[in-house]
Image 1 (tube, rainbow, N blue to C red):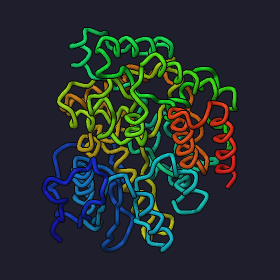
Image 2 (image 1 turned 60 degrees about the horizontal axis):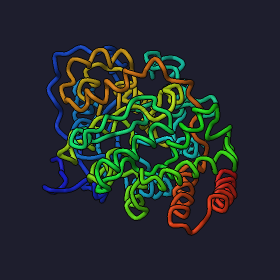
Image 3 (image 1 turned 90 degrees about the vertical axis):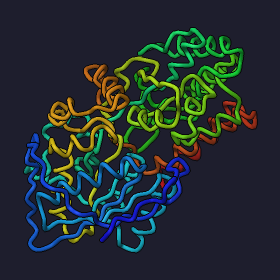
Length: 440
């Protein structure tokens, strides 16, 4: 069947549902040898068609399709029917499919739903296949393996490794004759730097995005002080910590380190195209390091990335997203074999590059390193390598209800910013609602 492409000019930043893709013709077998054979001979008898579903933009689709065709070139009995779309509405579509029992065989998910999908028995338990190395995770950092484990069971495999970073506008800072933010600045130093940037720009840009509603920023701030966002299936922090966090950002707003509330709300959802460092309204935003290439494509200014304020040990080897198999797939062995191939095969890793973040396998990273020519991908990879030896232990993946907790934090921060609530009132409401969300 011919490949159905998104219409010319389709804008992934608008997050609208993109046209489904049909199975593409096979690629000719390349001459490269992978880091691992990746168990590339499927144990299935007869033709197998696997459905695959992920979110992302056209570049991710291009590279993922190419890697899947490489698998089919080695396993001609296995073909793929692929569908992709922007992240808006992705999980709603999966929920509809789950209700009808027709989830695609192989899906991309993130840590906001990993535990929930495990408990709802939507995704396949891969533990036995990991134990006998049919899904070979021996080349992955231990923390990255742990971050795909729920209640001692391996439920998904990292499709990439990412870190939280401060993405900054290098050209703007040069124009303002301001220094770039440094790795491991204290939060106080970072806020002072952002205030100075606002002053240097005479208020036409702000120094930093307001991250008071950003769960990952709060999580790393808590870890920098020996805390955690979650303890088991409960919140790992209380009113005192959250009030201190909100007051930190109140002081930043009072010092004009951040822009106005209306601008902040535009970027609260995390959409790269709406990040204020991309739209030119701040010198810096908080983002995932694997988003740097996409953000760079959205602006003519050169972007850089450094670690979050606070110690690097507050971060951990974090899955940017996972590959997971549908529990009801008719071809569990074939799906697991594809996951193994995408994770451990050097040629596949070369094709995929760092589009989803650093390749999860350390061996594949080394194998593909010289072939990554995109300067922005190399910049993101260099950032990850710069703090790889300083990462702290990985926590367990977030519990069921995490997606709701994230939304509640954004709402609480917004209510404080527009002075609808004081910090104590907003904190009390958030804690009450978050506890209920985690208990549900």
